[in-house]
Image 1: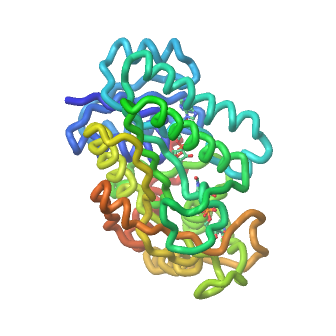
Image 2: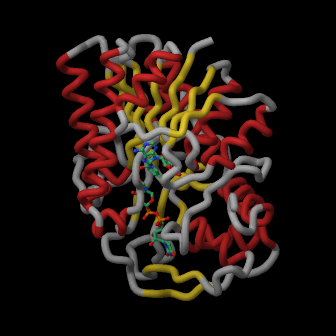
Length: 337
Ligand code: NAD
Ligand code: WQD
């Protein structure tokens, strides 16, 4: 059985991916410093897959700790979810973001090279497309960044491209996620942000259960079907399956692969709110507010390459995303606490 080191595996996308790796016959080795997650998520995953998991509480920046893990286990490939991800916070704390995201990636690839493990899947983001010139967005679209978080993703992409150019024995899949939402259908794991959520879906679920009063919809004057922002929301379980396909691919000596992970369909913020209301069986209160600085109007993926290269196709609907997100919120009113 192949060992896949999952850095950041206690987090939102990582915990769901651990399940899909196990379903596909891989053995995940989880590493996380729990800076933005709780060990409880791993316990929940153990309940879902009905087996105990290997977990190390460690920081990817701590090369000695990572060396110990690589010495204990023969690692076939690494998926790196570890990083900070809040756009607004990155503008306040750019040094911390560059240190953790870029420093963490460099430390990780250094240790990987020492152990001759040169297979890596990296969590990039549609944020590297900045304000796209056209949609759907293809992988060869112009890249740009508008905030330090986005810059860390773009700079890491450059670093990984250079690594692959210099040494053809590296196999790297750069996955550009669009907007991951939803939760595992069990309702045992899901997105559990600290404090008041910045992102749309966790904000709505908190409004749905009365923990927050009303959703502010940031902007109703975009050039979109109903004036509100349009995004490519993708169910986290679909996204996680994309990681398994990416691991399969790099283990075939693929070299560098860059793909979008989205559904290819853009839904508006209002469509998302209405679908939540339908699933909940009552109206989600909302009001229109000014545009959020830095936001773009429309963003959705061209999924042709993901299908051709990975055989990836998202199957879950917007209703699935809303139902599963709500289910997690209802079953865990205080998140993992
Ligand atoms: P998350 O915060 O839930 O998961 C990241 C995990 O990494 C957390 O468990 C955190 O404790 C851990 N971590 C952070 N720094 C670490 C370090 N130095 N060493 C070890 N562990 C560390 O975030 P997520 O939503 O699961 O995102 C996973 C990855 O996907 C991130 O890199 C993020 O930037 C990227 N991404 C996320 C989204 C999204 O909307 N959720 C979209 C595009 C890309
Ligand atoms: C979606 C839409 C908002 C909250 C962010 C990052 C991106 C990626 C995914 C990591 C927008 C609107 C939101 C609210 C609202 N992450 N909205 N009221 O901004 O598309 O992408 O997460 O890589 O890099 O920027 O996601 O969920 O914050 O917003 O009206 O309270 O919902 O204006 O149109 P976004 P989001």
